[in-house]
Length: 258
Length: 171
Figure 1 (tube, rainbow over the protein chains, first blue to last red):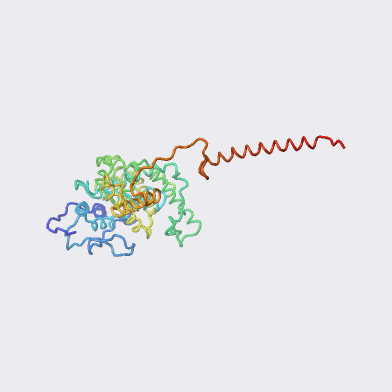
Figure 2 (cartoon, helix red, strand yellow; figure 1 turned 90 degrees about the horizontal axis):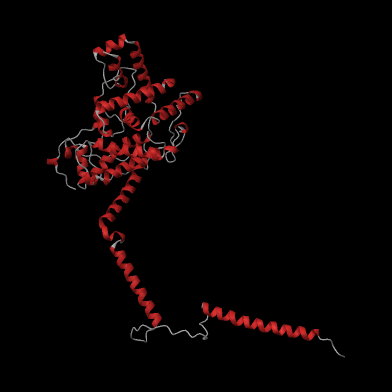
């Protein structure tokens, strides 16, 4: 598919990345927002690979700066709408990690998280013809992801007793454990650490839907108040208040672990 | 500044999202409960950092590609609308041809090749007492009827034998 360089213009920033960049440096010893929001930011320097597959170690499909200039996700999505499969591959590569991480913190297993993340991209693909560049792409993406995550949580409500979540459960494919024991700690310390992780997970999962999603987007995905407000269709002040209540709950409930 | 005003900013301050203003700094230095809450928020944020997400499985892309292929096929089917139920045209044509040949062979073998004309032949009327074609259900029933008659004859013979044996010898 030919790309019309002259018509390309920047209409949207990479929200997650920018929100990280906007963050004021914290003082030493302060808690940080997650250092990695899962968005592959280094995807704007080499040429686009037609297939987004090829394994995780394959060269990242990216859009060439020479072709796109100051490219934006909205612009890329409009290309997808026009039938550019490569552009879709670019978006998948850019956001797949972020989506899996987001879904992982709303589900019990990595397999379910990856399945849901794939479903997000399939819905993006299905909706490409009706896509309107009226909002940021990330807002649209996270709205899809949020709907899926909340529906999944409701569907599996009876299957996810928070107290029985096992941090030892290994991924069937990768063999990785949710919690890899820290070799520098004693067995007892590792046990305490596991309990702490389970508590964090359980307390976050036990938050009301909107609070939980807001915390995940704010704390782990690096979205700012404005973006979260757009995703949840709330005002910024309501979002701020929502997040404050959620963090207050977590502060109270996790007090014994700090 | 009041505690309420500072309170809402504490998560952002603890997360490093915002820097405290001078007024806020003054309040935090003067208000021990707010300073303590800020410290707790910092500890909570640090604790939450421990919850890390794992790396993607190596099959993520492969699976997504497979699902995307299925999606494209489904889209193509939806696009055909009325004829969506049909498989590919070549397959449909081949199936129709095979069906036509099969029907032709059946007609040829049933009615023979010497008739020349394709005339519909009505089945012969069934005669009530005519013996049915062997192997059919009617034939089996007729066989059972005749067997019953035979068994009845055997019973009569058995009765005669037993009567003869029962008569005493006169010698």
